[in-house]
Length: 324
Image (tube, rainbow, N blue to C red; front, side):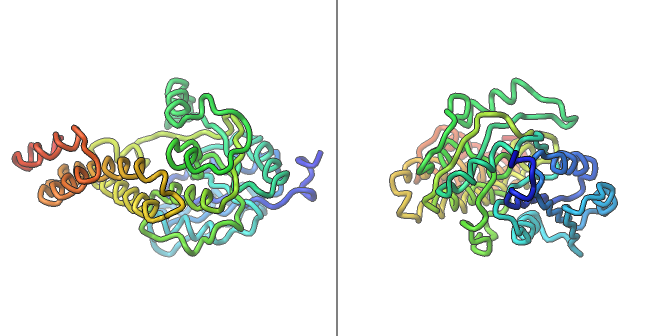
């Protein structure tokens, strides 16, 4: 069969930026080299980890892996984009250093792209696993339901603005294969930061091409204490501020795009919610004056009891407000 014959397969570039997760990285790479779809290159870009993971990479003795190491820590966004820009494949897929792929991830998604040149990407559902790699069934079901994949039918969606930017069913960071040529990788602004996947979704939608959905769970997203998502949802106010600023930038760009005019009401509401989250992060850092500015900005776009409550709390003593 064609899927087992690399000579009949287009090259897929697997993008794996990494920093200070040697054990997780080894597992991620194992899931990449074990793909039944074999015509791949794996681009590992190390962001100057305290422990150089080159020995781990070399232990695979796999010529398909291309390793590079930054001389200094460039930050997550530049490291990730540099890895994407090194890709030579017809298709690219992100495999973060703490996630995993099922063996048939590429074998099930690439053929759909090959069969239809009007597709920007192909995506699937995914499992949620904990720090030890154990599947969390309840979290998996909650995630699929929240991102509207539970009842999403297999097939092609074109256009897919709502599916990608409102439902957020598409995860370009975790569970998608993208047609590389449709993206101008040099045009992605650094302000998107950790929200590069949201912006990448936007660029894929804006291409005018479609998206193919496979309902199988073909990847495993790892939730653990060191992810920005986990940190920003808890007491790490720096992570919360960082994530909110990146998200705000993305939605501000969406609201400037006339092609998305019919989605502006949703973007306005989302912008207001994120602006409040930024204010809460600032308040937890005891920066109450700027936090109040953010709350007022949020209320100008969207009325919310959450924002009103946060604004009121911002007038109490800083140490108390920081516990909100």
